[in-house]
Length: 77
Image 1 (cartoon, rainbow, N blue to C red):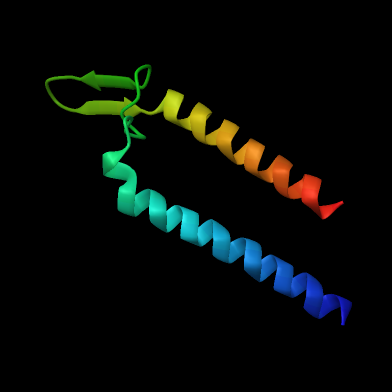
Image 2 (cartoon, rainbow, N blue to C red; image 1 turned 120 degrees about the horizontal axis):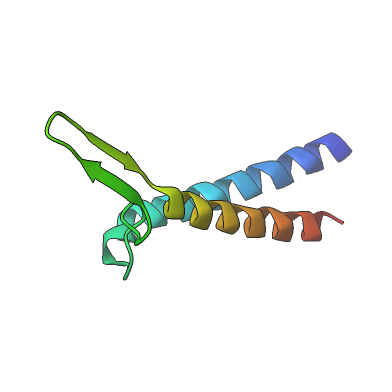
């Protein structure tokens, strides 16, 4: 029964994460900031092409995911 309980917890967490991701996509345009277009993201427009690297967006997402996984690990103890 322990394996079924662990699978249930995993499915519950995965469902909550999917719901949060869906809400982000649904209401993301109404947020006061736009992920992928934050100040500090590197953007270069040349004559023959362009280059875009969302460095600040990567840092923000990394911090958010680190905090989320830290909280999940805290509740797993």
